[in-house]
Structure formats: structure tokens, C-alpha cells
Length: 505
Image: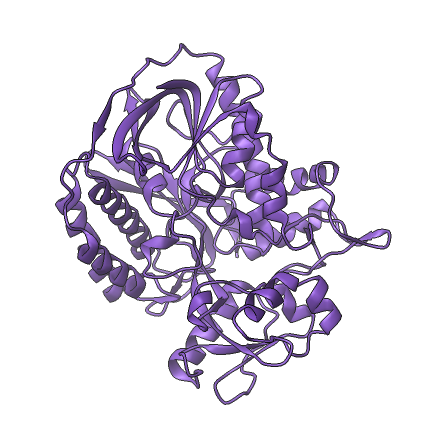
């Protein structure tokens, strides 16, 4: 099977990429789900009367602790206004009905009836490209520094096969499921990072993992489902197990996560080891218009959030680091592009609420345009159509639990060298155990997760100081913004530490 462009990932980033690339090239998109895209509530656009692109840029940089790639931030903020011509965002009278995310100077989140992600997905012209579902890429094919396609696994037939392509776009999301639990859907894993690293792609910011401060811990059927923090500007508050407020809720997500983590660990937790998210002061009309999806979610479980609080905890949510890209979503490997959460550099050390959804819309389209331009300049890919069955599967379930427990201990909200080192050793041992596991789907998946975990842990160990969502309890903050890049050096990761534009925090 061959194509001009192979897009890996079925969320908004991948769909936008495939639609744009298909204007000038043949495109195959493979997916194992839609990731977090259907849950995008809204996106940042500076539409408030007092807001502007410059203010949006400044808020994004400040939230990221000036660790961000400024060129990517400029593209994000400047491109946001163009989306007003593409989508019909909610209005109240003649003005846009905006929510205020944590870290923003003004209300900035524009939405489409609380279902922005679903609306964007429905806007995609799926007839313009080939979409193969229940397919997962497990390895990239690369020779002489140029990518030529990917080895894939069909989860329905149990067969492995290869898709050859002039260009490959990674749009497969972050790696939150290397943890035992997260806000991520089950199709999100460490494959994108591991596949890119293994062929020599440079990574950046792998230590920055943003924990959602308001993920459901009870009832069990809603475990991991997050509650939008813009509610804190509409009357919602946090309370501990003694029903007392313990923090200022209107702070950046990284700060709020630390405060909640400390209250659960050292204060007065709720019965299910969380804190209470109390929405009872949010006006009912506001709840049933702006936040109806959250109201309905809990109502289906027999809980009326307008009358009683719910239990939440911190949970891995967004991985801010990933494959390093430039302004055209190009990597350092010819023919390999990346967009969305699998890429790194945009958000810095802490993501501004409302920017994740905007990122996949903006950079998905940008990656599609760049990939099609590249594909138009290179020779056709070789046709490879061999299919072969999965070999007898190794038993990986227990090792996966061991990895996830180690990652949770090492890469939690607050970190220390001892726990990071112990987790690194466990991830390293699993890499060695599964590194030759060809054509065994579960084993290759665990190898990819172990490798991604190892690279994140290594980056977290290298950054001795605390910044943003990387909090080291065994060291102090320093004054300079620098990035940690990782690139394969023989059989070992090579680390580069660079100052960012001379920024001082």
C-alpha cells in the first residue's frame, strides 16, 4: 500500500492535516480513535473588546514561564482570528460569548455550544482522503535520514502491514497513558514519540507534563473526566474534606495542581482521596447554557452539580513536550512532520487553558500544507503491500502495570531525584526486554511506552530546577529559561541544554 502522504492520528490535528494535504496530494489517514478531540470545549481567540493578539501572545508566554518557542506562539496567536471566518462561535447578542481560562487577562475561550471539537470534526471533508480505522502505526521506516512510511497493525484482522509514503505526519497525540490513569482516552500512548526518536528525530520539553487540577475521582464511571476550570470565574470553588476552601482557585493550572496535590497528601482529603469541586454557586442559567455538557454528564450518574459538590483530583492531562518542529511543522528528519500534542515547544512549561484545542486546529492545517508541498518535490514511494500475522504474543500486562506505577511515582505533580532515578531504571529494563519484539503488537506497544517514559524521566532528571509543571522538591528554581532537547546518539539518548532567547524569568 502506498500514498503521497501518510497521516497518523484521527483527532482534529490529523483530520485537518489530511483535509488540507489532500488538496494537492493523495492522502491516507490511519487512526485508532479520535483522542481528546471530541472533548474540546472551546478555543482561545482574542475577541474581547479589550483583548488583542499581542496580549494573547504575552499571556501564552507568561503561562509557559517563557520556555515557549516564540515563533510557534506567534503563529498560534496570529492564526486564531482567521478561524472566525471558518466556524460560527457562540454569541450573546452582538458579542461573542467568551469564557475566561486560568492565566488569561481577558475572557478568550470561544466555543460552539460546548462541543467545539465535535463541530470541527464534523466540518472535515472526509471524502477528500482515505481514512483507515482501527489501524495503529508502531514503527517508522527511514533510510538515509529520510522517512518512507510506517509499519502498521490492523486491530481487526490482527495483521501487520506497511504503508509507503513520500511524507509522514505524526498527529497521534500525547503520551498520558504511560501513567496508570489520566484524563486521556485509551487510544493515546507513547508510540508517536518513540517512533520519531528511534529514527533520529529531535525531541524537546519532555519533562513538562501538565496535570489537570480538576479530574473526576468519583463516581467511578466518570473517572478521569475533567471539569473546565473557567467555572471558577462563574462562582465555582474548591473545598477540602472538611468543606473548607483551601486555595485561590484563579491561578495558573500548574500552581493549582500543586495546591490540590498538597491538600490531598498533607491536608484533609475527601472520602475518595480528592477535594470537592463545588459548582453550587454557579447560576443555574449559566450552568445550563455555558456548561450544560458537564451538568448532563453528572446528571446521568444521579448527581445534580447545582445542588451538591463532586470529588476531583489532579491527573495527567496534557503532555507539553514532544517532537521538535519548526514553523512549518517540519522535524529534523526529511519527510517527517508533526502537529498537535505529539509535538513540543509551543506551550513551554505550562499550557494556557484554551490553547490545546486551538493548537490542533491551527497546526493541523499548517502541517498538511507543508507536507503536500514537500511531497510534490520528491519521487513516488515504493509500493509495499505485504501483510503478515502477529507472532505469538508475549505476556505484557504485568510489565505494563510495573511501568505505569513507576511513571506515576517518578513523574507526579511533585518530583525528586530518588523517585525519578528508580523509575528510569525500571523503564530502561523494560526497553531492553522488549527492544527486539518485532511483529508482536502488545510487546512493541510496551516498548514504545517504555522508551517514551524513559526519555521523559531522563529529561526530568536533567532539569534540576523547578519551573511551571515540573516541580522538583529537592531543588530550587533558577533564573534562566532553557530547553532540554533529546536526540538519539548511537544507541543512547543525547541531551542538549540550550538557553531560550536569553529569557530571564
